[in-house]
Image (cartoon, rainbow over all chains, first blue to last red; front, side):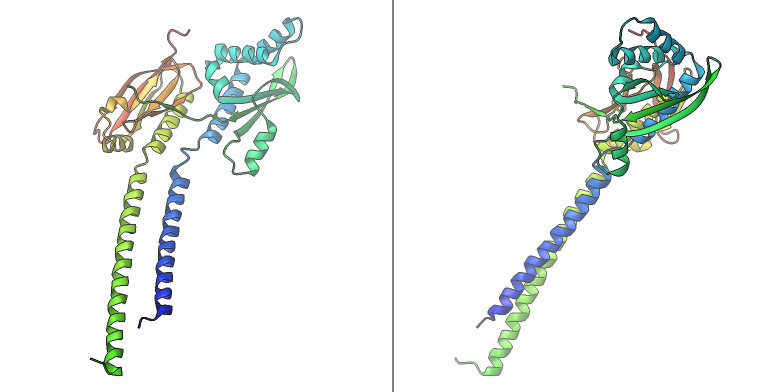
Amino acid sequence: MKNKRALIGNQLMGVLYLALLLLIALGIVAAIIGMFGKGYEFREAEATLMSEKIAKCLSESSTLEEFEQFINSRTGKLSSEEKVNAFLDLLSKNCNFHAKNIKEGLGFVIISNGEELVRWKYSETDCALKERSTADSYPSCFTTEFDAQRNGATQTIVVSVSSNHNSRERPAKV
Amino acid sequence: MKLSYTDSALLRGKRGASERLNDEVVFLIIFAVFIAVMVFYVGNRANNAAFWEDFYAKELAKMINLAKPGDEFRLDVHKATEIAQKNKVKSFSEIFVFDNAKSEVCVKLSPGSAKCYSYFVKLDVVDEELELAAPKNMLKFKVIEKVNEK
């Protein structure tokens, strides 16, 4: 006569064994997805690079002066989009930046002596949230500051850039 | 024939031992199948073409963002070519494609889609060439001022 308790115990051990293997498999899959699933994280490096490049451009060229002249020359209020386009056109003309790609891939804000000159898709809240959370949707940000001699006075220029730029998939050619 | 107590106990023991052996064999087979599946999966993912496409596209864009007109580059792309070859990409000339019109670089390491990443400077990439076995596979290219800007 078979020992029913032993049979049940045997079956239970079998189920536990399979559950253990499943747990190990899930752990391995999760580790691999964690390491390789998200792509190459590059936003912080890009925000740093572009913040410093734009700051270098502003310090070595007349971009800021020309931008302020443009704003002062316009009668009536300028929309933020018009300001951004004018600023990017000057960056493109003076420092060889690609205005369209910057507009699509980056956010920025330029501040002179505490006064905001131009802003595009840059949010201090999002930057702060990125530092405090592991969520991927927030952009990476970097700020570069420098002092410039302008109009006989020293002005502090702050260049903050955010990047949520990612690669795009190009479908296979048919 | 009625078995004695000792004989029936021995027979139960033998049955128990052979059942245990069967269970062990089944567990071993399940474990072997599990190991084989895991090794196959990890091996497959270790050659993660999507990740390396992303890596090379972004690193190349970074190099171009930092470049000045006239700069020449020579980059070790041996790993990329190995992965592309394993994934049966038709030709090495398909791996790295610089699109000067869109100012972006595309990297393809598998027969499917490619990963493209745009850069932020107005420069054109010219004279791109894949040097094979010199001693490793190297990508060479030059950047110049943008030509025919729209």
